[in-house]
Length: 326
Length: 268
Image 1: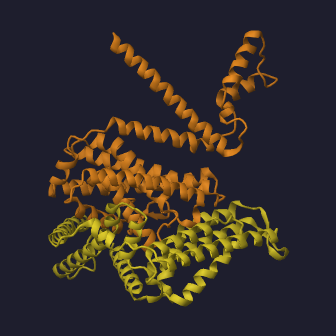
Image 2 (image 1 turned 90 degrees about the vertical axis):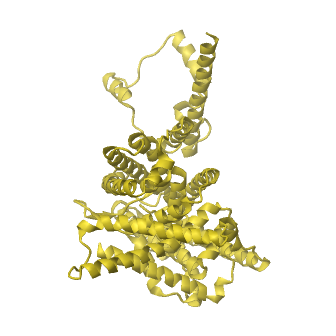
Image 3 (image 1 turned 135 degrees about the vertical axis):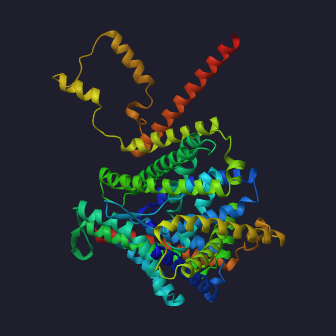
């Protein structure tokens, strides 16, 4: 899953570097706030362990290909999200510098693909709610396998998007995603099983690793809101560019039913409403008027997310005030 | 499984070889790490900025050719690293051969399929980018790279983790060697480690490495180790000559990039 420099454009590589730098900064600040000196050797050994595991390629049955684990979920399960993100970043820096696995420009993309989805999405939203206090064997196995699969699915999908956005390959989106997703599903399942095995073993051999850090931890509401907001921006600003240009199901069906291809409209009321809509629609057809191309759709998408968020916040505040007055 | 362990050991050996080489190189190791990191980054940025049909990227082979002549690195190291990158690059590039049937004009009136040209440029970019990263580590010891990363304001905890991960890899490999030796002595008739024993060995290896790592870290703390001070010890300030050398290199890269445009313009 390591992307090479040759496969990213400066724009994609630079944007992903900036994103990963911000995430590293946040993680470093969080780790510093709750700094525990005794965790440094564990972080180092976990890094070395994941590094070594990534060098072992295993055969994926029925595909004729091989893969290696990502390791992000294993790190997050044992260290927590923020230290895990730093450790996977360190592993990827070493691989990029000393082993040419990945590249300097593609480093940001690799950190994001292998670290962000596992440490900040799959771990708090899937792993922790299922594994809970690490007391049940079944829960640990289920949490490890599910979260590893989900983390790797998102990560590999990002590889597809970043490569296609860089414009270096003619591989169609469907074919590329169709090849990447099933392979990483299998890798995720193997990684999940390995993670579960390691956690179960360490739970018996080193129970203090789990008691201090993970017992009774709940998912922060603010963190969930933050992740959802980030996901909304990514979907509206980037993934929406891949949306189909064909009419949606309703438009297509109506187009088939009516003969002239256009619905008959008329009347003063309709005209008045159309006039109001034309005045209000700053982002007609999900684009900024007067600005063409991709940037127009990206700005319109992000602005749409901000407007919806603002509306919901104002409405929620209004409801809260009314509730307090009662 | 036995091959995997041997693969990890050989990778570590090649990394040690890199470290020894970087320490012995006197011509470039005196240059500050931040300057070299920045130069590598500018080089990679210029290389990947070429379009898929842009053969001007070949102009950038001037730099690795000159450096190869001066540094004389072991060719095996370079080709080993190239082999790591090639599978995914070739997979992505080959798709261009299949799906891109456009016709592209080459200099001197030649015409060929766009897919072939883009496949070739992707391969060129991969070779150049691997070369840039390899040149950096061949001429810069790991501690100097750590200092360089600190100079770019990377968090101390991340730089410490990077250095410790590299060092603990040695510790882990040493433990693996001992365990393998003990296993072979107890089961002399077996050619390798039984698959049914692997999970126990890997788990034990992890615990033993962790114990040793904790002891090492405690010893470091007892000797007054302070992560920030140690990492910042290797942080260097650039001299005027280094900044001038960097600016010259950046200018040369920009000049070649511009020459690439002219080359493309003349071809079309």
